[in-house]
Length: 290
Ligand SMILES: C[S@@+](CC[C@H](N)C(=O)[O-])C[C@H]1O[C@@H](n2cnc3c(N)ncnc32)[C@H](O)[C@@H]1O
Image 1 (cartoon, rainbow, N blue to C red):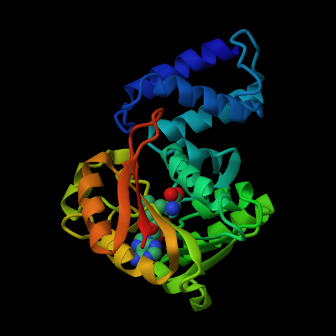
Image 2 (cartoon, rainbow, N blue to C red):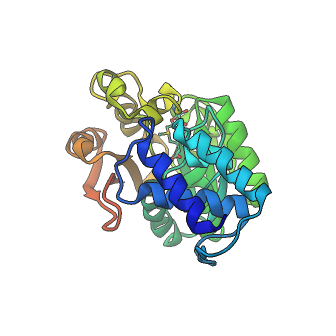
């Protein structure tokens, strides 16, 4: 069998699956190509998948096993064992939030601000597998990047990711800023947060492939309005930031006004919503510490 035949068959199976959220045009083909490239050990983006290329039996079996898992709703990143985030391979495993492409914009907003500072310091609250802290460590010369998460499992994965990528970042377990060394109080340039923001009552409306594969504590803080953890961060972040430092929060578009108001209440100025023009599924709310 060749690449084209395998892709066509996989797309048909993925399209028919009710465990997959078919929200994006051509998502099934994009995912099938991604998985086949992984089975063939080809880096997509550098090499195009040639539809005429014959696929040997071992690679075909590898690919078909992966498609079987995807048809049941398992995210592609968990099947492959990693997500690509700003060019880095971030290890992904069940129990830890899978990094999303949409968060690359949060990282970009942080990196842009950190690059303007001398010996910059970043604290990435609710870091998961370390995604934002590692992107900053990779792209901002001289940055000191800290990540913190309430999940010891997430912090273990973040440390493993840092070691695999040979990046310098420090990770601690704790509730919000609880895992950050207290000597950083008043010295931080940028605080980033991609919080669990789904209101408690909306958890059951999420697509199956999110609800079944992401732990609930990574999606919702169990508050009625989804603003519990965001509100606490907005009121505590000022104690850690330098005057003129930034708080950046990734949220869904429908939450942006409420989050802006919470940030203003926390003492932030210049609060506004920023959006990645290519990828509009989330917003990054930015606010400056007075
Ligand atoms: C949406 S995930 C974001 C993970 C990562 N920043 C990313 O973008 O890939 C939310 C994260 O918040 C963490 N979390 C939940 N409650 C927390 C708390 N009270 N303090 C610190 N982290 C928390 C979860 O463990 C999870 O890793």
